[in-house]
Amino acid sequence: MILITGASGQIGIDLADALVDRLGDNNVLVTDLRMPEKMRPGRKYDILDVTFMESVDRIIRTNEVHTIYHLAGILSATGERHPDLAWSVNVNGVRNVMEAAHNHKCRVFWPSSIAVFGPTTPKMNTPQETVTEPGTMYGATKVTGELLCKFHASHHNLDVRSVRFPGIISHSAPPGGGTTDWAVDMFFQAVETGTYECFVTEETRMPMMYMPDAVKSILDLMDSPKEDITVRTSYNIAAFSFSAGELAAAIQRHIPGFVCTYKPDFRQDIADSWPSSIDDSRARRDWNWSPDFGLKEMVSDMLKHVRLK
Ligand code: SER
Image (tube, rainbow, N blue to C red; front, side, top):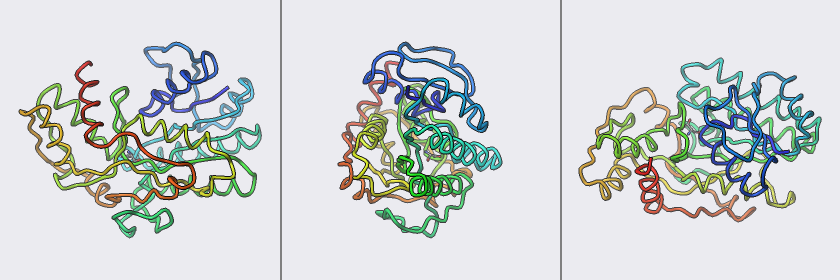
């Protein structure tokens, strides 16, 4: 059985669909803090709080789990408001999952983030190995998680794999509490109201990725032969970077009357401390990482889906 934690979140919904498509019915167990309002076919549901080791251990044991996609986590903006919660879920959660995975010989995927970087990291084409001195609690938890991955891989031969996701743009499930959420909100507000007040400045440029590519990266990484995986902290991956103003202009090509205004809030400082673009050559070399969607294709596809909603 495959276990997904945090399965009601932005990535979990789409990843579960992809895994069910691939593996057929009843091979994927999706868990979160509560049952979702709408159940989808082909998967089992359960409740799991990853901060409780006994619960993590029990769910793995009783369902004969062999692979874990550990997605439960608190994002950057929420983490700044609730640092204790971010530490508890992001650090204790990942530690519990890795220890249980070690005990039950499971493979693990865990998402890290561009938030491991900070103001002292080179901002353009940020290298795989570079300064990781984040200014946020979220970033601190992700750096810690990466080091736990490396520790378990080297000391316990645990096959844990990870990517540093940029902002992820999707239409199936909203992101919750991230600094890159503006890129998703802009689409929904453009279609629904024709206006959007963006919480970062027009010039703020951030690395982003469309959800189908995010899911593809997870599947490709997990499909790769173990000997090809040379990074056991977390791989840089990239698709495209754009500024808020550039995204607004790209949406205006489809919705000419769309008006975007800018009113930066506390998330601006977080955005400013993260890279503008990422060097993902190691992922490209080791497991042939390559995104399918460019900015133009992503914008057309997003608007098509958001309009249907
Ligand atoms: N998208 C995430 C956030 O903004 C980054 O990992 O928090």
